[in-house]
Length: 109
Image (tube, rainbow, N blue to C red; front, side):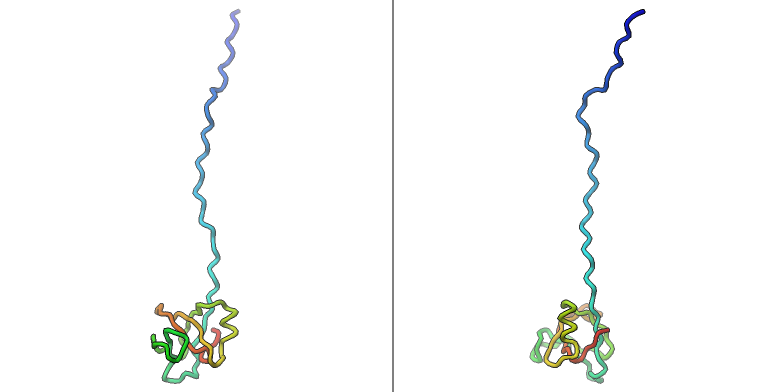
């Protein structure tokens, strides 16, 4: 009987790294949007949205009572100002325009 040759062992090749899956972008929670409603107390004249937080700020547009706005400030600040005289809240209206409204004429929606 002839000696059997040893079975060939594994060939030493450099291990091929498994393809790395793309790292998903970290999921940043969508900030909770604070919704405000233009109070009925503005009457038929509406609520003026201004470019700056001042009665002298240029008029951006006039908002009707009942319009839903999105506050663009932290909710704590908004809650502290809603309904208060001489305070302004930075908001976005449904059409996308941004500006300041007098806090005394809006309520949390």
